[in-house]
Amino acid sequence: MIFENNEAYKMAISKAILKAESQTSGEVRVHVDKKCSGDPQKEAISHFNRLKMYKTKNRNGILIYIAYEDRKLAIIGDKNINEKVPDNYWENTKDQLIDSFKKEEYVNGLVQAISDVGEKLKLYFPYYEDDINELANELSQGEGK
Image (cartoon, rainbow, N blue to C red; front, side, top):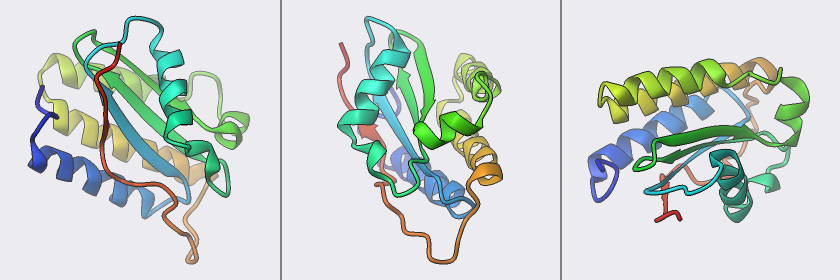
């Protein structure tokens, strides 16, 4: 997969996260696994907790989870986001990401999805001058199960 051992792609993703977070107080993370044998939503929640994304001041973290060999993904938000957005709020972003992956536009698709997440987050969680980057912007990776 292109995300493995490719520093240029990892840097592009980190830069996209930094740019998205420059317009919102929300925090964005991306986690990539090879496999996900079960429900990607549950796996995303597991990684969300492992990455301690619930520890943001405003409880406004978003995780984009991708299991590339099993072609699964999920986008989940923390408590305060989920209280404000409609149930299918992330579906268009997921659909656009899937379309990009089908065209093998992995990095461009993910960069666009991160940008879309930032745009959506700023509606509910605008950027403040004293905002602190509370979570790492690097791509998180694992093997998955």
